[in-house]
Amino acid sequence: MSVPAVAVIGAGYAGLACAVELARRGVHVTVFERSHTLGGRARVVPKELQWRVDNGQHILAGAYGELTRLLRLTGGSPRLLEHLPLTLHVPGRLHLKAAALPAPFHLAVGLLRARGLAWADRLAMLRLMRGLKRANFRVAAELTVEQLLRDTRQTPALIELIWEPLCVAALNTPIAEASAQIFANVLRDSLASGAAASELLLPRVDLSELFPVPAARYLATRRGKLRTGDAITAIKPVDGGFRLEGDPGSQPWQNVVLATAPYHAAPLLASTGSCDRLAAQIEALPYEPIVTVYLALGRGQSLPEIMIGLLTGAAAGPAQWAFDRGRLGGPEGLIACVISAHGPHESLPRDELILATHAQLERQLGRRLPAPEWSQVIVEKRATIACRPDIRRPGIRTPLPGLYLAGDYIDSDYPATLESAVRSGVACADAIAARLQPPA
Ligand SMILES: Cc1cc2nc3c(=O)[nH]c(=O)nc-3n(C[C@H](O)[C@H](O)[C@H](O)COP(=O)(O)OP(=O)(O)OC[C@H]3O[C@@H](n4cnc5c(N)ncnc54)[C@H](O)[C@@H]3O)c2cc1C
Image 1: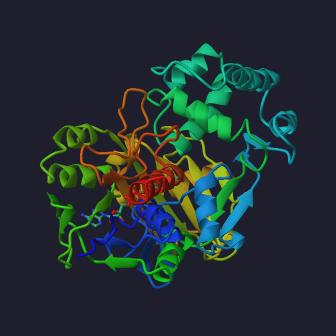
Image 2: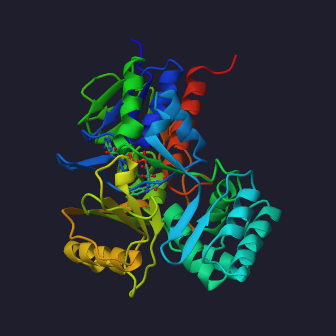
Image 3: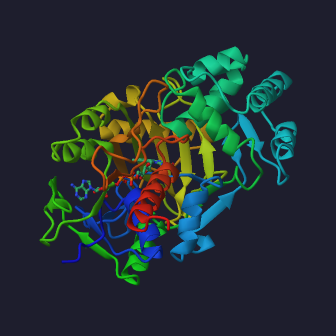
């Protein structure tokens, strides 16, 4: 009896990256997804016919090399992403735009031209970047971003307007707790890399359309299977591989990639009866939430830039960033306001959060805005793992040969992002391909 090669559990970005990469190499792969929507934590949430929004506004970076490669492989078109030079615009306070020049001139010239920064701020920023570069972007493993900023004498304006919002956007963790090493890695691949790597790539289609749907199409043309609405409830080691409870088929799988979010991976790992320590390590990972407030302000309403930074705090408001979805292929006037990480906003009822965000936009844009025609608050309580220096992220291997882990939480020099998710999926595909075809 021939054993089917690979089962992937989860059709998020990690699982689909793994499946696409295996299919590319001619391996037969079946993906099990419990939901009927593809994309996991990066998916479309059709609310009403007119409002197809995502579960959260996502930003990609030019440095997302693996994801952009997979987008091209699966037939994605460049028009799916809006390419913006790194621009930090806080209305009335800051305008910093990277120049279209090779590193480090893109940042240096951008800083020279920036509005809203004093000379002390510019010098402090260059000091931090130069110091990191000299140290090859290595910092002490236990250092937090806050300590790094203090040690390099960053100014209060820089911290408020640039470092704090950048850290929370990239690591989804406040500076007081965030890992300085992971932040340094993000700076290495963005501000300190060429203009292309530091570009911001904003999806012009919904997050299921961006990669998961083209990935599913790619699989279909390479004899891959995708079973939606099929939740796997347990993984049982058997002779020759694994039996998956919830799989309508009866054959065991020689290789299984568990590509769910960590909080779903831990119980499935425990169900094998042989991975209790690994399951406990994953169970212990801390999480941070992300809230997205969608405000449909109607025709004629737009932001001064596609993406703007917002001042936060008790006097200012809860959201850190606002995105003009109307200029990203969405309905005119639809604004997505993002609140990353834990904070006082968590105690607000949804109606009050909508009011607070609307008032914050009015104050910071300096004009009255119409009442929203439609609004929606989407709360992802466990959006990503908290990117702290003391967390232990697992690798792709488990104690059981043939059972692998993929997901944004897998050990990586990146925070828990789309890029780390797809990298882990591709790493699993590499390991399985090597197992199926040992080098001659
Ligand atoms: C609101 C929000 C904003 C974000 N913003 C950004 C951003 O700006 N930039 C960025 O790079 N990243 C961002 N992220 C992080 C990014 O979305 C995640 O890192 C990424 O989507 C994780 O992908 P994954 O494949 O590892 O896991 P998931 O997306 O969680 O995929 C796991 C899949 O497994 C399925 N599944 C679970 N259990 C089972 C089971 N028993 N059987 C079958 N299937 C199962 C789930 O339904 C899901 O589809 C954001 C996340 C959120 C929530």
